[in-house]
Each structure stands twice: as structure tokens, then as C-alpha cells.
Image (cartoon, rainbow, N blue to C red; front, top):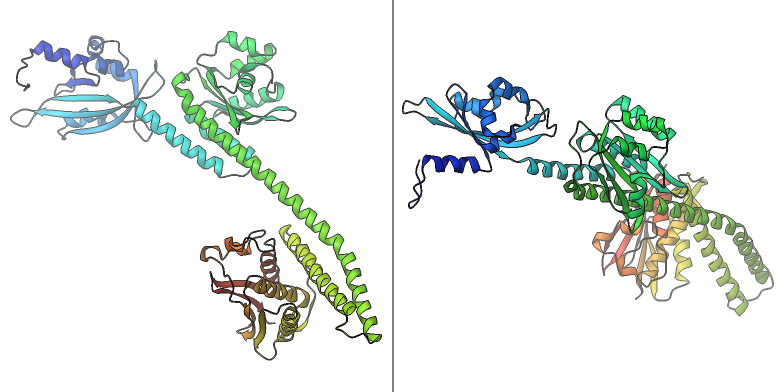
Length: 545
């Protein structure tokens, strides 16, 4: 053995160095018998000192512990690096788990074996080095558990199902028993209970049915009140007796064989939502103070998922209430609007019979009132269609023969009369007939032309093009206005959403969403091509039957 110049250690000095090493070190002779072990190696396999370790028969040594591979299955002795080195294999290393009857927790070591050879190549002895990596493996397992917990919590919008999935995940890797309690308006409700043993699971369910969580006593109540984790490293019979409500309650708790427990409050946005309770039996290693930060992080993620789920549920309830209100409001507005429009049109006919010129003030006012009331009626009908579709109800269609070219000219004329800064023209086929829902298609076309005028504030030309394609009719509305940002072309078809460059312009972002939904209900579609600052072209596609 070589040494650094200036240090001439004796054999006893070298032995003392080896004995003091933090890693376990053993030496085997060619027959596999142990001829040397330091104290660290002895402690790893459950002996107090190296002398006890070396004095024990090899059969007794092997009987003391179970070997486990990284795949969590038993590891055969022949897979140990020392055995392989004695068989003539070069230096090898393997991750090995050790578990003894006295220490049920698995300890992990990186075991490296180095053969020392004679001049003739035969094995003289084998040096085994055991580096304890238990903390590293524990950290890996915790990080993996947190990642898996995040995945299962995000997989379901139903918070009760997500919390049950979390309980199923942590048992048995992190706990032998998992319970989740939630704080509700009328008290504490248990939403998840998991135990790997079906009989113990039945006991736990019986326990829950007979003795629901006590909001005033016990570790759960204290965790909810203090917002602090509650750690019980050893659960004694005296503790069970103090916690139990009666003798039968004590017997049920004893039947679970609890050894230690940790109760973590579920807190999100400064609000206590519930508690996550983890317990281990006496056969498992107890929870320790150093476990608490990891368990708190697990509880934090569970609380965040629970809070998000509740926020989503509240948002969905709000959307449903809004849609219900819009449906009722639009339904209730239809009748009076129809009556107003009918009376206005009747007044117009009476003025015509009285031969009052159209340019007269009263005639102009009536025409404006008819036009405005018609636009409001279309908006109400649009709201009614959108709310019905969002609630999953199909639209009732009224089919009749329609000439899309005539419809386009009528819509163009109506909008041209309201703007002097735009020129609205119709091009394409001279006639395009088919059977469609006239009212709804006209409403969609009015919406598109209205948008073309609104989003080209500097005026310019708006072109409505009507052409027949292969088994379909196409109506496009093109403007040269502000256009739509490239990454927001689909945003404009979302209800109550508008392009970012449309701020300050009137509208609620409902027209295009409703138009596309209505057309798709009729086996059609609405698409857009646009460039910001250059304008947009919206195209209606209708199947020709």
C-alpha cells in the first residue's frame, strides 16, 4: 500500500483509518468468508460492532436481513457484487436494499466490489465498500411521489375523486392508512379513506360511520384550529383511550394497529379547507420530524388542487347562472320587441297611405326606429340561440328556399344606407338558391357586414362575394380594416372574447362565436383569413342540398 510522502502509518494506523471510515468496508477471502469488517459495515446489517459481525456464522448473518433490488423485488445472493467479484468478474457496483426484522425500514447502499488478484490471476481477496444512500433514495421517492400526486390531482375536476386518488397513491408508499377530511358549512366531512388491507379498510369505514370526525377533539381538530402539522411519532394505548369516545371506539382504533401518524392542514389562500391524515402501523418505520416538510408540501399541493377545483365549480355555476339569465331575458324580450316592431311598421304603412314624403322628419324617425328595433330583435335572437347551444339544446330550424345573392344584396343595401364612409358591393354569381334557415343565415350575414363596417373605422370598400362551390355555397365578407393578430384568429370565435386590437370599440364578443355555433348546428361553418392592419375575410360555408 502506498502512502503520501511524509506520512509513514503503521498497519494499526491503517486499520484505525478503515474502522473510522463512514462507508462500510468488508473483505472476503477466496472462499467468501468475511476476514475483515469495519463498524460502519456492521451497523448497516444490524450488528453493534465489527467484532460481533465477524463472530457471527455467515448463515446467521444472511438470515438477519432481506436483500432488495431497485425494482423492489428480492435480490438473489449471486447478484451481490462480492459474489460476482469472487467469480472472477471485474469491479462492479449495485444498489442494494437491506431490511431486517429489527429495522423494517429499507436501508439502501451503493455496494462496490473490487477483486485483488494474485500474480497468477487468481482472486486473493475481495474488498466490498457499502456507501449508505438511504437519504438519497428517500429524496428520490419523495420527489417522485410529489410528481405523481400533482398528476393525479390535476387529472380530475371532481375534487372528491381527486382526493381519493391521492389517498390511493400515498398508500402504501408513504402511509399504511390515509384519510382526507374537508371543512364544510355544517362541519367536517370525511371524503376519502384508504387502507391496503381489505379487512382494515372495512374497520376504517365502520369507524367512519360510527364515529365521524370530532371537530373539537383530536389531532385533526387541532390541525384545523392551529393550521399547523400534528406529528405523533408513537401512538400509545393511552393516547387512543384519550381520543376515543367510548370503549368500542378504542377497540376499533386498536384494530387498525396504528404506530405513528401525521395530520396536515389543507390551507389555500389563507383558508383552511380540510386535513390530510397519514398513519403507519407499528410494523412500519414511524414518522419523524424530518418527514414533516415533505408531507407539508404534499398537503400544499392537495390544498391547491382542492381550491382550484372549487374555484372552477364556482365559475361554472356563475356561467350557468349567466346563461340562464340570458336565456330568460332574451325569451322575455322577444314578445315586446315583436310588438314594438309590428306597431312601427304599421305606422310606416299608414304614413305611406297618407302620402307623407319619406324624407319628412316623422318618416325618417320611424325608419330609424324600425331599423334599430330590428337590430335589437336580431341581437336578442342571437342571444337566444347561443344560450340554447351552450346548454346543449339543439336549435329548431325553419327551412325554406333562399336565394343567397338576393339576401346579400338586401343586407348590403340596408348597411349602405347607414354609412357614408364605406362602399358595400356584392359580386359573384347572379343567383344561388338552396334550402336553408333564412332567418339565421341573414342574421349571420348582418353580423359579418356590421363587423366589417365597425372594424374598418377609416372607411373603404367592403365586398360580399357569393359563389357556388363543390356541393356547397360560399359567402365571404371582406374588409380592409384593422385585421386580427395572427395568433388570435381562433380567439375571436370564443364567446365574450375579442381580439386585443379591438379594445375601445363597441361589442361584447358574442356575435362571431354565436354565428359559428349556429352555422355548425346547420352542418355549415365560419372561417377567417386576416392580417393585422390589412383587413379580414370571413367566409360562410353552407351545404347545398
